[in-house]
Amino acid sequence: MQCDVCKKKPATVFLTQILGGKIQKVNLCESCSKEKGVADPTGFALTDLLLGVGNSDEVASPVGSARCPVCGFSQAELKKTGRLGCSACYDAFEEALGSLLKAMHKGTAHHGKVPARAMRSHELSRQVEALQDSLAKAVGDENYESAASLRDQIRQLELGLQPENG
Image 1 (cartoon, rainbow, N blue to C red):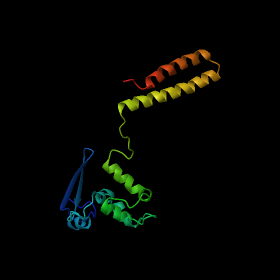
Image 2: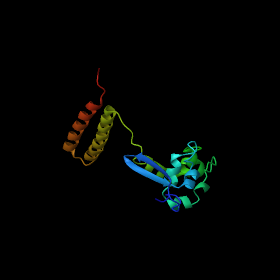
Image 3: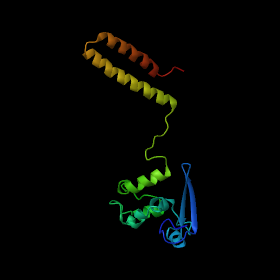
Image 4: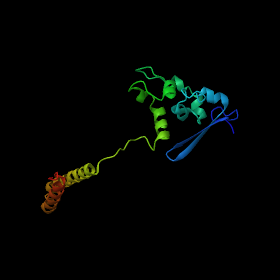
């Protein structure tokens, strides 16, 4: 089995990682594993492997030459430490961070969680807004029967928005 980095020497170090239920394996030769800091546990960075190993085009490109214009933090330092120097680094290393986040998580957007009561309230507010827009259009078109029906629907939804007395 060949090294995933240099593609020349036989692999002697085998790393396995499970991300999102998918198994990712990295095979390294002796010299590439030392270069990546795998032999030294303090120098080993998961981000280094995720940003570089397996894509020989990326490894051959001058990855370490990119620097943050504000703090001067380099992409090589990002890969080594797994941390950013300042808030401007997010823009400077946007491409590398995007691929890193995709590899580590299910996607690049945070959706979070919302309490059920707040979600219900938000949904009702959205429905009221949509009905109010329709009501304004119906009044503008002088369709008063439809406007009255929409007004009644809005009142019913607004009753659901009122806090419960406890």
